[in-house]
Structure formats: structure tokens, C-alpha cells
Image 1 (cartoon, rainbow, N blue to C red):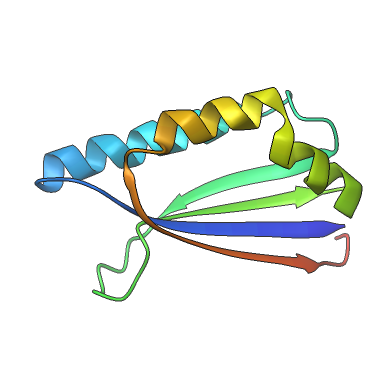
Image 2 (image 1 turned 90 degrees about the horizontal axis):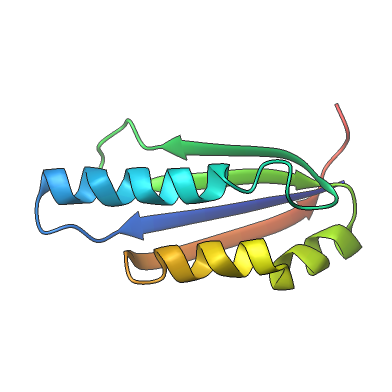
Length: 102
């Protein structure tokens, strides 16, 4: 199993705009559930710490194999989500690793 973790900082002129953009990102990724072959789990978390070095949002997703993750990268639904959130992110970080199945 491959665990795919992506963290973003999100644009926002003020707290309300930032919260709206975070919700837009969360809703976009939740819309992928059940649409991506090999996607076993998808979780979106919003930072609650408020520390200045934290990212705003994290995506944790598990794929059955590296091939499934590779296919996800070019899947039309994933490309749609990338287009939906492209203008709201200010930074992106990613880690992929082999994880044991629970």
C-alpha cells in the first residue's frame, strides 16, 4: 500500500476568505471518493494548531499500489480537482511512502 500525503497553504485576503478556500479544497477532494480505482482511503484535515509554521490543510490517502497512485496522477477526476484548487494554494508539500495495511 502507498500512503500519499499532501499539505497545502491556502490563499486568503482575510480569515473568512481563507476559510472559504479551505472548504473549497476540502470539498473538491472529498468529491473523489468512489471515483478513483485503487484509492482505498481519503482523509482531509484542517490545521487546528494555529502555529505559524503549520500548513493549512493535509490530504492523507492510501492507494493499493504504486501503479494505482501513478494512475491517479493523470485520472480526469484528479485533474479536475487540481484545476479547481490551483489558484487558491500558495505552497504544496508531498510525501509518498510504502505503508503497512492496517
